[in-house]
Length: 636
Image (tube, rainbow, N blue to C red; front, top):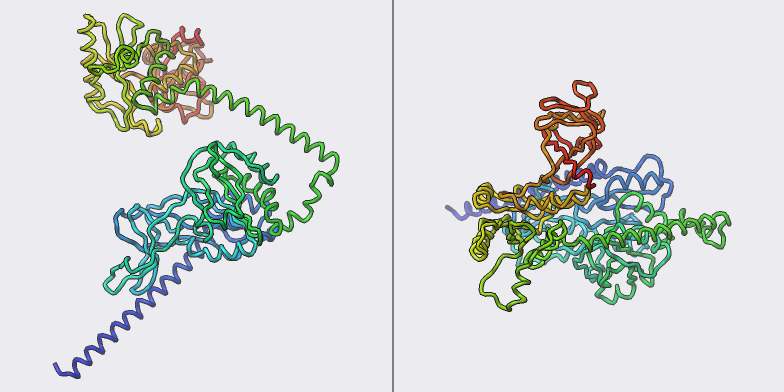
């Protein structure tokens, strides 16, 4: 190839590359324009546009960020100039050590012009995927997030992008209200890909952003995860203290607040602390300037609470932002009030004080009950010695008298035992119960369910009797809330082995539910005691519940159920029961109809209808109906 031909080829290649870059740039600009238009449409459709009629209060401009739309409706109805916005929704990505460009999905209408910004830092719902994959052209800088958490939180980038606007709002006297959550971060870099579509993180700068980055100076506020709902008010301004006093009993906290820099320490006012004196609520009020930041725990985020904030609390913090609400506020001070109004205020204070005293008495009763029956909750959460102790207390609670804690008894006799023994013995009846107790974070295995058999054999040999019955007591998946645990607890072959070996398998969650039923309806303790002597998996059916039939239909208009009677007759005045996954339900049969005729008794194979006090959500078609034995009725 000649020299001039080589030059022509090179020129053509360079020209084609330039044209390619221009086309990609045009496509990128078109896509950006489309995204901008989509954001505007989302803002109009999902977050609401300003109402045609002017608000009652033009000032302040209020932006509700990541709060329910019902709050916007209530706030606008009250006359406030409010909009709804969001920093965006996290979305799932394949979990790996790679990076993906962040697909922003925030909607913050007229953000720079807002004066009061109320932000809930609770992470919104995680989307299954981003609405649209973000593609970044070669050489174009963008935010790239590491995928090692299996999700990308675009809120962190949105907050970083808008932090200058937030700072201007604050510097010009704006007010931020923040419902706190612990600080969370992701590895995010602002960089670009090269012509080989490679992302070289080593030559890039990591973006220092997290879920508190909407205001730069908040980076020096340490926000660790701490959790609880017991909080104490500190002495502060009356309006805020009165508000917090109303909501504190319905609130919880998930984050501590610890100012680390002198800049924040000098203008920090703590409002709420937990029982360990950790601050969980506070205010940032600079000595100069009118900007304010009010940081609160997770108070109820409902229309009434937010309206109380806007009407009664925030105007006292930033009166310049609420000219219409604060213009004649001085008239509400006691020295200007009417005597009749002062009288009503005193009555209001007396009612509040009386209510607080009554609530304090009730709270003490609640704590006393929880302390007295604490073993019931420990039985479904604990393991090892704590679990054994709670099961021992439980056995005594349901009426067993002669309960032996073998570990404690052996500990009295010798410091070191030669071999492990069972956990508990019950000697109330001729047949002695041998109980092996286990707390697990998983479903029980064969070793867990069969170990008690070894101790039964040992005791039979030692005592020279076969009147010994083994019980495996299992607290399975103890870290998971009870209603979310796997059912059935025991596998089919474990049930068959238990029946073959004459032992009982029981899980503490079923014991807990049985005991709640006993306490509610006054069952005789034998109703649960007897279940410990039945081989196989312990039933949730008390021994005095007798099958009657099944629910054939539920007639909502009349609150009537139709029962297909199959096992025994149903009589008027009898007590019937239903067992749901969550509870036991009992009621009296006040009337019976068969073929629309009132009768005193419904016989086997008849379809009987009775009135019920329970809704159709609880009583389902096919559910077994039980009759309750008379001895239980008399005891209750």
